[in-house]
Image (tube, rainbow, N blue to C red):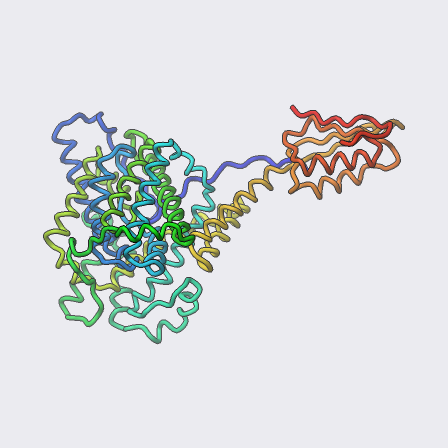
Length: 519
């Protein structure tokens, strides 16, 4: 029962809404380049790149979440103009994320679109409070396996749901129902919508391989643009994005919705919004910091910035926002040097939503579903799973259990189960005890030395080892090498020592005293 050597922790997971973060050029630190025109040209260019990446993703996340497409643009605009202007992380970009799609969809279906704004508003205020209390860094204490399992579960549910939209078929409710219905999906699929969706997926996969083209236009924009051109050019009879106008989609929370905050289900959803959105944003910040040489992220300020953005999104009845790695990495790769690039990307989204909302009506829903299927696949850490199993088998089990629990139940319950399992695993890993027996050669008392962390989790094995100590001779139980001893274990050890001729907690016979010293 000796302790095992410690192993290094796995790296921080990549935040949702993205492929794995690729290697990127490291831009000049903010301030080091001065305030010349070169810096502004770099930021303006980067802002256009981020805008082109964000546009289809904002719309796609909104449609997949069951809300008007314009609300995704509203969240993207707020992410640029509000969160982007506040201190925290200098190059990270915020907006609606695929990682929250499942949770938002469940909330809208269960409580209605009117309650969404209230949930996001209160979640934003909670994030501001947590940031002011300087609790931002504590979100990074969440087990990496739980976060990766959460992303994998979200990715699986997202794929299962969006495959139906890709085929223009109504999706069953619940994760298990979606997976059970996949077998008959081909028979019900609309051939035209399915062809558009599969073609969009093909472009998403193949376009990045043409590096020259990918540097000019991002794959999501190209894929959705081609699908819209083909659909409009041939007049294909498929479902397209419905547009109501930016102002018509904004629905501030109504005062009567405040009473719903006492409902257990609403409170659970609210906690899930706060924890998941905060964890995603701060994990993304850690990933972005490794991609550039600029100022490091102040996690407490970043949490306040995310909270301010979500508070504004909630006041407008829009989607929740998080920092997202795909837009952030595009910002870094495009050469952004200051926060001006992410603020400007919000300006471009605002101009598009105000001047060209009709352009959304030519986008087929199947193409947006393909974008989300592709994003969902990137949330599943396929490449990291085998190395994790080899080096951290317990962490791999936590990851798998969290993902499966999310599919079978819901996001909040799945993450809660993953956290509980992770805590139990940590307690088990830290409960290592070692037993040594001295004085076997003589006829006097045996000295039994116990060391390590003794908890109830390891107590059965510890008592088995103690029962193997030769009988018929009194014992002295020395616990001076024990680093931690819980009450249950101490009571059991004292009872055993008293039974073997030592002096237990209740005093007793003429044995050798029990030494319960602890350093």
